[in-house]
Structure formats: C-alpha cells, structure tokens
Image (tube, rainbow over all chains, first blue to last red):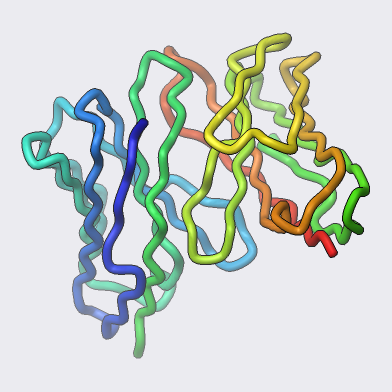
Length: 113
Length: 114
C-alpha cells in the first residue's frame, strides 16, 4: 500500500519568514495530494491540494509543488503569521476509487513573534 | 449546514466495555470515513463507506465495526475496548467523484480506555 513520509516533524520560524514542509510517497499510482491544517482540539481542514497533472499550485501565501518523477511534494508558506501555527499533514490518494487518504505523520509549525 | 458532527467529544471507558461513536453529516455526501489519530502520528483509516449499505475495511479495522444504514449517519462501534484503542477518532465525509476530492472532518472524539 501507499506510504507517506513527512519532514520535519517540528518547525519553528519567525513571523514573516517562509516555511517549507516536505513529503514523499511510495505509490506511483497516487494522483491526488492534499495538505491539511489541524489546530489544537479541532479536526483537520484542507488548505490546498494538487493533482498529478499539475506541477505547482498557489493560493495567496500558500503554494504546493509536486515532482512526480521523484515522488515528492512540498508545502510552502510565505510571510508566516502567528495564526499559521498549527500541525500540518500531507496526504496521498488515488482518485476514482474511494479516495482513501494515506497521511504523513505531521509537522508542528510554530511561528514566533 | 452543520457539516460533520461527532458525539461524544470525550469518553472514558473501562477495559472490556463497548460503545458507539456517532458521526453525522448534512451535506448529502456519499463517502464517509473513520480515522484514528495517535499522538505524534498521522491519521490512520479504520473503515470507510462509499454509500448507504456499503462499508469496507481500512488500514486498522481490528476491534471496530461500522454500519451505514442512511446517507447521513456512519456510527463506529467498539466492542471489548482495549487500552490500545485510546486515541482521537475523526469522522470525515466527501461528496464523491463528481463533487470533488476534499474530505471534510468532524471535530473528533477523544477516547481513553483504562
């Protein structure tokens, strides 16, 4: 089955700096890669996703890049703000089926003032 | 829309007890999922359903059962609770292949088995 590895497990940045979180996946059939943000005591919430036919996607301060050949994808957050502090999860799945997500182990991002 | 709701928020069980975690969604989604989240780990899929009357096992189904008699509800049953089932449980739903891939998560149920 699919295996998703995520690094780093914790990341501390100063407000205004950029943050990058990286994930690798094992199953070349995976074609959908979402990123979820989980705030304390809440369920994960989708912040951005990318399909395998696209190399990069951007939404304001958040961007995701995908390298299908190397089987890795990354989340980039620019101009970080204190409200970006949370746990971020990457995931991978194959669309067209039940789209069962395989999650990475999460990155705790802390944005300091 | 309330989205995905889960009850209870917290529960403490004794070893060997049983309970049902409730999950409901009001978005008319076809797909529903149950995950567990252990400390420092990602979410692991327990069971999922592609529509009323259809369920299937995920990655970690042992010790759990599900049913899906309606589109809205997807309860998770724990029989003979064990300490290894101490976790936070999340239910999620998704519209379907034509409705997008986003899974919407509930707020979670924190379960402790002592």
